[in-house]
Length: 64
Length: 257
Image: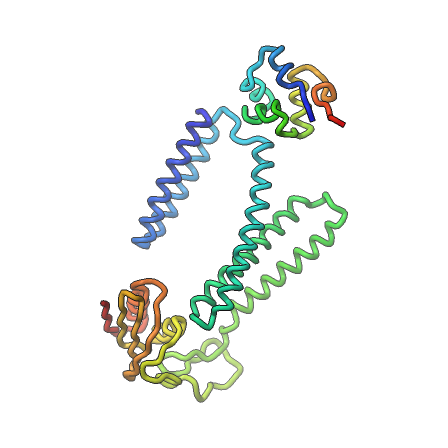
């Protein structure tokens, strides 16, 4: 699974810490998400998409 | 307060509790330890509300769940293996049997608690939930039955104390005629298990104890018969002898190397 979290976050001039605070997780979780090493829950995906003002299916994409 | 500072304080609190735990083990003052644990837990719980950062999120909970599953599996497997090994060695010392049973019960207890909590957390999420409740109820009944047998089996029976049968509760069987004579079954210089030694001390049948640094213990019965055994840790026999003195009201001569 790939995602555009890093690109969209940088476009909105948000730091990892700020994004983490907005969605209620630890900064490390954002790091792992951006590196594609962690698959978020549907709720967290929804929260991140809401903060970055995109839909979930645009934020996350599957390889197959 | 930041997460890092909270983590540091938590480590400090754990160290303080550890120091008091060691102190309590040496001085046998467990009340002080309980007070310190409660104070530390209250202090950390209060401090936690002052942390503005997220302490744990869904990723942490996921990792914790995975770690818990692996821990349960490893602990149960290793403990069960160790328990069977120790029980197989029971002929070499009664201590092996005790530790083996403790480990076996610990493994069963852990799996039982895991199953109970798992069933509670997954309630309503599976179509087989009724079956789960039945299984859990049966397991609980089995555990309670075993505990009941272990706890209450000896309530109505004859106990051997000071070479005499003492009525304990309301036993249905008549008083046994043999098996409680002073030194019954013992010969001079016989090696006995540590359990038997503990029982003899508890039954006020020992008048003298001696120990060496190699944990070898010599017990002298009230009729002069000397028995050999091995204590699990140094000075353990002296402690039991002191307790027996208080309980029995008689003096036990204690000697150590």
